[in-house]
Image (cartoon, rainbow, N blue to C red; front, side):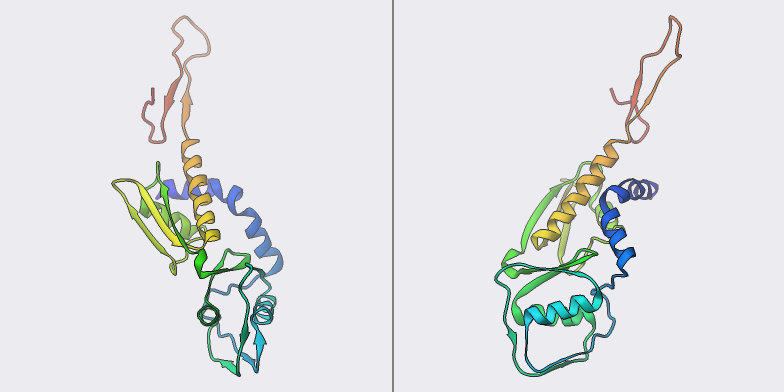
Length: 204
């Protein structure tokens, strides 16, 4: 547990400082909660609906090409924010991912499976790290095998890229914890440097 806490403190500044700063400075609201989102329209384009939605929550919006259409007929939603997004995703056949500052909209065909190799962390530790950083979204599929030290995630490309960047930062941070103990500064019996791994064991 201490290892995970130390890791988060080490990589938080390098990985999440920009998004955290943006959240604090602009008072962004999260679209991935159960806050009611009343919405009424007679007929609107998807672009208009998403633009209104993200402006209302003061978050960014990125929509990939090819995603468009009109919402036919009237609509009055007694839905939550996340239910409203899921409703639109089902109507217009897209997948969405909120990265903490921006709502990313991509076609269903953008969903893929990616496998990551783990060196210093178990699959369960990787899940805890992603959750602690606010990256993990349980709407996407995640699996891991401790024996082969592999981690699998299924989701849109931007989400998988973010997961991969977090895993890489975590692994690099853990490797950087190797310490060096040196012997006396002078004398005929000066000891040679001893390299220690992250568990305090000699690493020759």
